[in-house]
Amino acid sequence: MRSKFSCAIVVVAALAALNLASARADGHITACDRLASHPEDPDKVVPGVPTSAVDQPAAIAACEVVVADDPSDMRATYQLARVLFYAGRSADAVATMQVAAEGGYRQAQFVMGALISNKRPDASEDICDAEHWWYESAKNGRLAAQVSYVRHVTKGYFDACELRASVKDMEAFLDNVRQNDRDYYVRLLLADLTEDLAAYKAGQ
Amino acid sequence: MKLLTSVLSAVALFAAGPAFAEGDFITECDILVSHGEDPDRIAPGVDDVLLFAGRAACEDAVAKDPDNPRLRYQLGRVLFYSGEAQASLPHLGFAAEAGSEQAQFVLGYITDEGLQGIKKDPCKVEDLWVRSARQGRFAARVSYPRHVAHGKFESCGIQASPDEIRGFLTAAADQADGYYQQLLVAEVTDTYEASSHAK
Image (cartoon, rainbow over all chains, first blue to last red; front, side, top):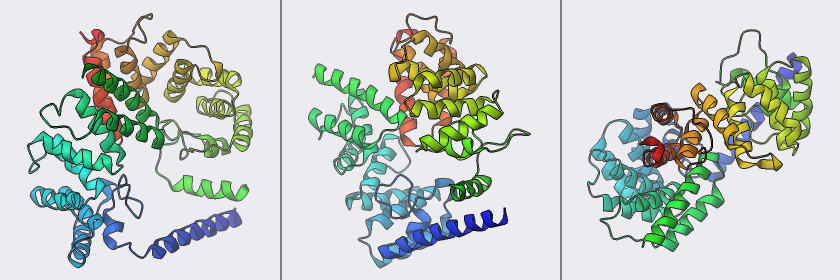
């Protein structure tokens, strides 16, 4: 029993060391990444931290240092915005998220669209701004934006907007999600959205 | 292999997960074949099941404890993944009848899809999924209303009332884990409310 347990500890320690080594080899991982990465951000460089586990004061301090040192670091800017939201600093969060979105960070673009769509405080009240951000994020390959964009178009939520995506673009969005995510729930969602998009196309 | 088992056992001991039933213990079948979304699992879930080792472990576990629904479901799972659907059905069926909400959902799913040549039977699916949904399985709580809304159960007696179906979806909204699941619940809710069954 004791030798088995020792073996287990050795293996776990070796795996942890390998993980640490690969993290250090990257050279760009900061305390902001370790404290504030979002688990679903496709451009994160470390495993994400669930919302409930974020140490808000430490993460804000760490991300502010990184952003002050390199304002062009859009990953850190997004992560700072993320934690500012959790800390209840809504206006600062939206302004910071907008910087990251305008800097081309696809997760921030997706979140901007979600904030607007969900009518969150301090976010734009113009649903067409959500259309803009989700289109940008979808074009950059963020899967959640690709499904959200199609859903909002087919439900008519963007009827007042000039759509940037064609039906062909939206079909490509769904195809891309189909190829990259085989989760049961995503497949159900895709099946329904594909039907909705076909009906939308037929009604044009 | 023993080393792997030792490591996984150590991890399982410290991992957060469903509580053990009194007198229950983790078998190698649990370590190798548990499903991550099975609320009755007692070990961390496994996505990539080792078919040969998993089958041997679960056959051994079921031989020792044949009335255990969790182990019967897991043996059914590994047999199905091994392409032996007909051999898996009695185990999935036993677990479903014994109240495993995971087995109820999965047996309904493979029957709905007609996977591996299993005969499609929408009314069997309706019965399995309504029981799973009533017990709280998220997948059943969205799949059942979705099928009702799409008319897939029209030839069956739909056991759940509109209010109960709305209850499934309300509960599913609270259970949803992550953006896609939230979006799916919203989508199914919209589809259900627009359907004739809801009116």
